[in-house]
Image (cartoon, rainbow, N blue to C red; front, side, top):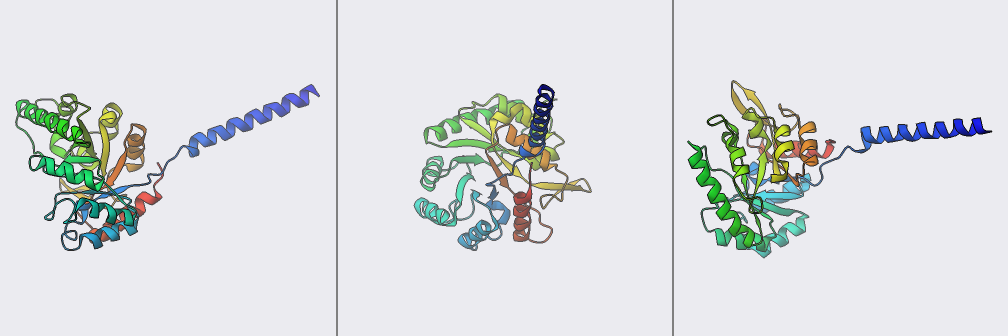
Length: 281
């Protein structure tokens, strides 16, 4: 009897271990839902029909929008309450916008708050010639970020490849990370541009992931030494690995952006949404 009981317990233990191993192998995989889109991806369509274009994107499965400072402003001619009501009806939240932080900062803060946004982001500053120049940028970011924080929002910087290209043996992006106040300045990692600059995005996130709250998800191929963006899953970025690393290191928002299109912007947006809906990381 004791021998049979021992064997039974051993089999139960082995089965439990097998189930646990299987859960570790499969059960911890995650999907990214919701995911968003940077409206600049459809920049040729937005000025002509902003509401119609956003409606199409929502129907494709995008539940978060990141806007940009288009010809009608980042709320596309709508008052803040009108924009929020329109987006609520679509089942979409406008999380963030790219904007010109050197112009009408107080107005941008007021409009973003009224429309329910969380982030105001600097989209571009250009390469700097020296670290004295980068120090001025870091100081300006700290000053702007403090004002935005006191206004109830978060301020951040979206990189291009230039801030990941070495200058005097160092990486300017790392300088910004180390010389801006985390309570006032956060970052949006463009995963295309860090990889295009020759850096390892996953390793960067393992070290500095606590400073990044949003990311741009976009794929690319290098053709004749030129970076050409393409639909997700058809380029050179290993997003299955990279997005899992981003999730494990605290990334909050995953925003698809694409500026080159094999066919057309909306076809690419459809393909990108389908890729994200199927992806398990």
